[in-house]
Image (tube, rainbow, N blue to C red; front, side, top):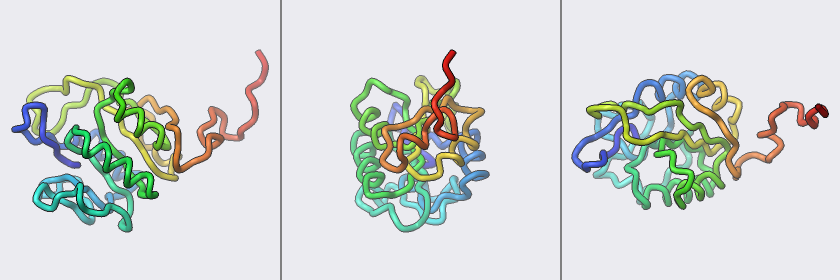
Length: 179
């Protein structure tokens, strides 16, 4: 989502340009933003507002999905459902590795980028009270790494989309030399 309801449920917090600029540079404009506002600040080709109910809509068939959702269970389940069906998704979420939702999504993910420092969301009065993670479900792990390597600590997910060898520390898949 380009914007989500904040902790107090009365503010809309938009995705910071620090996230959007590298996404656009390397991936282009997303094909869908399933949870945004009518002004479509992410610039997605298609978008769903709260009135459109992105949870009940299919997400596939139109390019990469960018999602900064309301941080609630139905959205995590929808991301998992759509990623499991092969939809390429870049999701901005709270980084909560101990939470069941995060573990489920991490198992499906190609890569996870833990944002260095805390984000200040557009419309938020201050820096977020939590760390953030970009979770990527898709085949273009090289693009994700190039886009976010200076902003994120990037680790492999469980990976629905890529084989473990594509996540190896060395690109040629050779074993590490002995010390």
